[in-house]
Amino acid sequence: MPFVAALLPVAVYIFVVYKLDSFSLLSVKRLLVLVLSGMLTALASFGLFRLLDPHLTETTSDYLYPLLEEVMKAIPLLILASNKKIVFFIDSVICGAAVGGGFSILENIFYLVLGEPLGMGTVLFRGLEVALIHMGCSAIVAAALMFGVRMAERIKSGLSVKKSDLAMSLFLLVIAPVLHILHNALHFNPLIQFFCVFAALAGLLVWTYQYDGDMIHRWLDRGLDKQVSLLQSIRAGQLGETKTGQFLLSIKETFPQEVFFDVICYVELNVELSVAAKSRFMMREAGLDLPLEDSQKATYLSQYEEYTILEKRLGKSARMAVAPVVKFYPADRKALEDLLAECRQA
Image 1 (tube, rainbow, N blue to C red):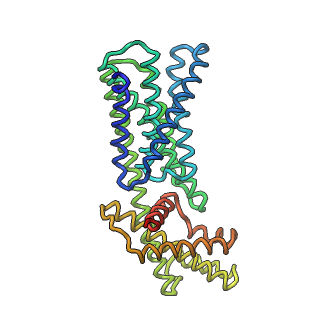
Image 2 (image 1 turned 180 degrees about the horizontal axis):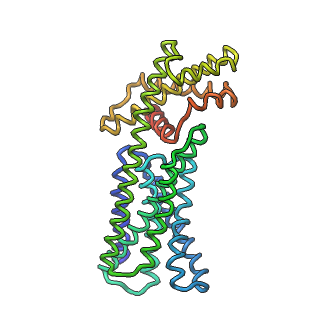
Image 3 (image 1 turned 180 degrees about the vertical axis):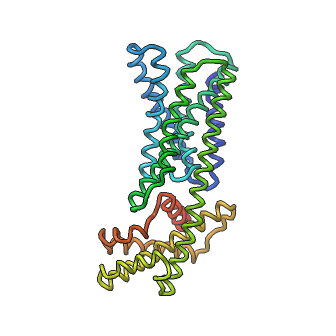
């Protein structure tokens, strides 16, 4: 029974956070893999701490071990972020909570097996507090890595990085281990400590959510408006009416006529697919997840096939020339992947 009591808060928290994923960004399989990876990082941390214990004082370990734990938990999250699997705030929170939850599951088991016998109330309370600190800090780290991926994509596309985005990412990377260290190093009334941790983590996550929400709205609203205007100008044969169209005309003499025609087709398909993917995303956000018609599915799949053919045919130099126009950020890629997956469903 104590094992069930220790694991119950973690299971409930993961379930609740997963249910927040209204866009179905993560499969149950991936969520379980993340929980398992969190357990493996806990096992690795336990082995590392056993090696370090004889050489450290208790005070030093209170400050060093939380930092090492956050670094260890960040490894699977960094792998996900580098593969652009964390692109929105909600999936960063889910991934971070899953890894932190897996870590706290094994940590609670270690305390039950190796520690002194504890009462049921203490087991429940400690299980909740451990789950909270590990899941919350890992979620904050995952959000920081999400911002890092977005900034890397902007640099890759030749765009400038906002100082506020860089500051936000660095702040989150620093504050997560700091909160964990304070939790371990400052010992006072457990109930007060719990509510302090809860308030700090909740406040940080809400603030990050609002910041990310503003970025998402800029991505959807402003980006969508520009893409629709560009698409209309291409179809009307009036490229000069938009700044993006003017840029395309400025590089016209760089390529042979037939290659420039392929470039325009490539840009047009990119914009069409991006607009379609963002539109589906906005519909799901509004709760209007209406099924696509078979003709729409066939059209999107055909457009994507043609897009990939053109991408290969144009070559690297041509793609680099239009990179400021044809830029798929991680959020764009995720939205397109979701659209194509929906189109491939029978």
